[in-house]
Image 1 (cartoon, rainbow, N blue to C red):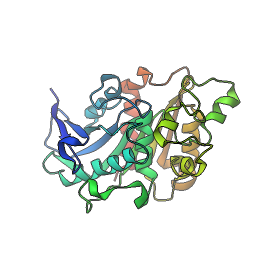
Image 2: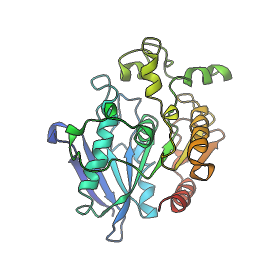
Image 3: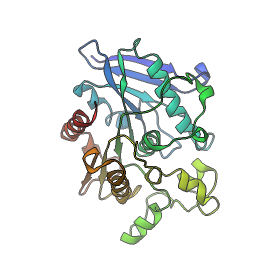
Length: 279
């Protein structure tokens, strides 16, 4: 049975704030590299213990990684950049308590599915105080991650609608430009009302030379986030950090949240990529 620590508050808000769960591999005393995992749910739902999302995280245990599954505040009550700031706070908390939970503070991997993949991508690319809130705790701990694993994540909010339109695909959620879209609820404004906000919140537009290695997975039949989002992100990463530090898997016929991505063969690709790029 996996060793597990449940419902750990990770901010200065204590029990009134978000919490995380930590899973350790069945064997060994660590310190274990850590997959910091964010669930999906269109920014408005989901939970750290949700089985369908956790299926994209718990296979990491078989590769000798610990998993920290993180809850974050949901829209519309919480808006950008609150979940990003909370994700950074979770990283700082885990580093501060690394010895207690047998974690390796030198090897943190941001992971996520869908909206959680977006948060993970932002942790890997976004810099600057405006996306952070050090009052959430442990301001002196580093909040950097050494790699990222993204499953069908949106990475450029400014191109998402156009990418669907170019292929004649109707999004199964309201378009980003719609006031009813999850993105409008998350940002509190439409993209036409605040285009600069959507630009500065797009990981593919924030990639820089110090960004960590990333591996991305996406399905061609995704009608929530077009697979071109991962292609665009991979191209930006390859240009900035090198093709050897970027891996892209576009899988024909798979959909958004497709459980086929949880098969161990895909995690074998992740383990090989991380073994090559984590030092």
